[in-house]
Every structure is written in C-alpha cells, then in structure tokens.
Amino acid sequence: MIPGQDRSPPTPTELIWVTPQTDLTGGGTLYNLRTLRALEDLGVGTMRLDAPGRWPVPAADDVESLGSRLRTARADRPEAVVVVDGLIAAGAPQLFSGDPPAADVLLLHLPVARDGAEGAAVERERRALGRASRVVVTGRWAADQVRAICGRDDAEIIVPGTEPPGPTFDPGRNRGDAEPTFAVVASLTPRKNHRLVGEALSGLLGLRWRLLLAGPGAETPFGRARLADLDRLMPGRVSLRGQVAPEDMDRLWAETDLLLLPSTAETYGMVVTEAAARGIPAFVSAGTGAAESVADAGRALPVDSPTEWSQALRRWLNDPREREELAAAADRRRDMLPTWRQSALRWTHLVRSLRTG
Image (tube, rainbow, N blue to C red):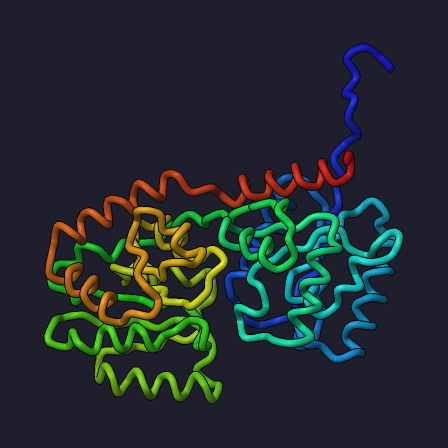
C-alpha cells in the first residue's frame, strides 16, 4: 500500500430509497424527502423508488411489482445501499431475506401497531426488523419500541433536521391585541387525538383564544365526525386550514403562538422541532417521542387527562411570564436543533459503516 493512502474504501455514492407513494405530507414522508434532498446536496446519488399500494397491508400484486422494480434497480446500481420505509417493510419483509437481500436498511418512522395496524402486519414488521442489516429510527422512543418488538438494541437514531424559516416568515407573537392562537398540525386520525384538545379547551371558552387545525383527513368519515365534535365543543373558535404544503407552512407558523400535539403515540414529533425552529413552544403528550423533541420548550402532559391540559392552557393564557419563559426556551431550543445537512451526514456515516463492516 502506498504510504499515506486512505486505507478505507470510498463511501458508496448511491442510495435507493423505497417509500410509499402518497400525496399526503406527513412526518414520515417529509423526513424521507428532505433527507434525500440533503443527501443529494452532499453529492450522494439518490434514487427514490415510490411504491404504490395500501401499505402496510398491500395487495399481492403491489408486493410483486415492488420486488421486480427493486431487483432491476439493484442490477443497475449494484453498489447502492437500499433503504426501505417501515410501512413498506411491514408489508414486504421478504425484501430483507435472501443472499444477498434486496434491501439493507429499515427506516422505522412509527411501529404499525401504534398506528392502528394489527395481526399479520404487526408480525410482518417484527420479521422485517429482525432481518434487516440495519434499523434506523428517528428518536429514543422509537429505539425502545424496536427493542420491545424484536429484542434489537442496535437501532441507530438519526433525528430529523429542521427547515430554517423562509424570508417571508414574520413571527406572530407580540401581535398586540390579536387573540392568542393555538395550532394543531396533524392529520385527522384517531392517533392524533384532536378530541383531547377539544375537551381541554371547552372549559376555557370564557377566555380569548382561537384554534387552527392544519392537516389532511377532513374528507374522511372519521375526520368529518371529529370536526363536528370539535365544533360542538368549541363553537366559533376553530379554523380549518386542511393540508398545508410544506412551502406554505411559514404562513401558518406566523399566526401561531403555541403548538398542541396531543397524539397517543409519536416517534419524534417533527412538527414540534419545526415550531421550535421558529421560536414557537409546544404542549405535547408525555410518554411519546414528542416529549423528547420538545425538551424544555414547552410542556409534556398526560395523554389521558384533558383536565391537566386545560389547567396548563389556562395558565399559559393568563400568565404573561409563563408565555415569555416558554417562548424564550423555544428560542434557545432553536439554536440547538440539527439541520437536515447534519442529519444527512449521519446517514453517510451509516452507509460507510454498512459497506465497510
């Protein structure tokens, strides 16, 4: 070997990232897209392989089609590392079998059982987690979930980065006599637990505030029923924004004084750090990954106690010092948050370790 020569092989310059095909902009989808973009900025060649289907419970044809497309992609890019989104892994664990397997890394956003799946999908996810060469999660809570599901204690944590505020962002705090504004940025699904917010705020109708709801799902039977329930609990206080495109979120943040995320389960709660990146604190559910992401820039409250949420919200509304302290904590938290470039660099280190052993 020539003296001074780098003894380690070069980092692979290609990734194939297998993700569910969807029009929804949930946290998992945004993590995938923004990580891919940051990897490309670092010079890593990426291929996004969108998989149609109702993952994690796909049709047999969807699984067969994905397997064929992935084999073709690997043949064209034999040195590429293949990352598979956890929803797809729970529908096609066989991607991690074979010699060599079709896939290398399982990226778990949220265990499927914590999002309402049961039976075969849960068992398929367990098999996939056990077989994958590497498992990546987005927070400590998710790493604990992996340990509980299959006994693995080597899941690597690569937390989401944050998008800096755009040039048009104008903080909504200190808006004079404007009503204090809460925001729930979450899909209208059972796990996101909007009803807790309705129950908590229904006892505060004598105070000035308004509630913004942003996220998909209003057109579903569950979403329609939940919105009707919230309107009954908080008449005249709720403004529905629907699904907001990522590039338009700064307009919503500019109106927001406090984020509310009462989910029954969250792997990390990327929306919490997006809010903190704009100096906005959050109230989240204790015992979920969102408590990790909020740190001291808000409050972690019991997910089964609307009364405690109501008391905390009343204190926030009535106590200017409470509001100022939490906003200051969010400002400090903003300075400690990783960028998407930093998260992507963690991915390149993972790739290097996978290929060099």
